[in-house]
Image 1: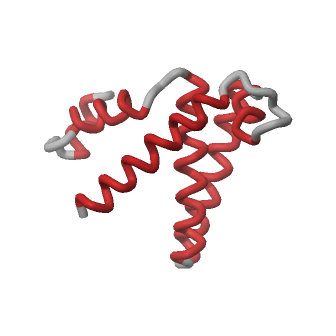
Image 2: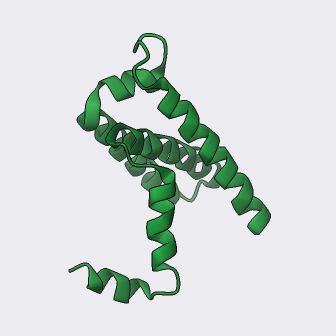
Image 3: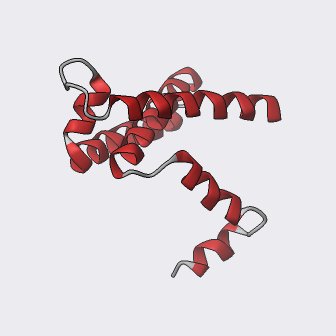
Length: 111
């Protein structure tokens, strides 16, 4: 499991670098740049659309479709984070702080 996790972390880290590098690029040169140029609303809308598509793929039981949609969700999540200036390291720190805490307890602590 760790080997796959390490691979995922590397892929996501490189993807984040690519996305951040597209900030400010002409929107006609890059899909990522066009999303970022659209601001928070465009990035959030696209992320939401992809999340719904992933949920529908999961409900259908189509593993290959879900896998592809999950990749789209991760990409659009990182675009949305980058548009807001949030890094994957910051997200990882929040997740690390939650490790070992019951999901019920963690959620109750936020209310």
